[in-house]
Image (cartoon, rainbow, N blue to C red; front, side, top):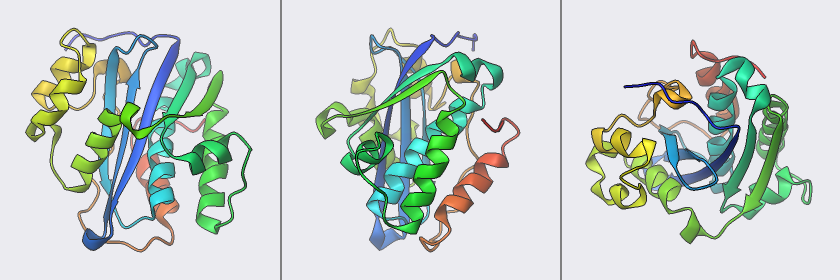
Length: 210
């Protein structure tokens, strides 16, 4: 697969899905440019989280992976589009995080944002977040993107992401294939979920702190 160059400005769609009955959550982040060309995505299954924790975990997943491009991250401008009012309002400083887990997630997200030239957060309706939503729900069910034909409609055939999705690769050389190791398919308590996620990120050979 040929290597692609990341544009200076990226749009990042994130979403989290939860299945309390399965003791599992799904995290997804989709990276595109302003014109809608998809460069890649990450979709991972995680343990038991609340809805807001899963939304934050998806944001942290994207920030951690994009920070992993090294020195180039300092030149990146990121526009996060999320359908979670809680995450957007807290990241914009318009609302406070009251639970210890969300306060910790908010602090870590802000720390990671410092690695980039600019990071913004905006709220979008769920209908505009359909790809990240589908990937997160697919991940929580434990299925790979190669088995989710319904996702194909979201990717233009001319997009760099199209071939990766259809082949089940899941991410492109454009983002250096920063795949995180598969999460254990078992339940784990919500307490300490952020520490577990960060340990997983830092365990990657491509992790570089912001």
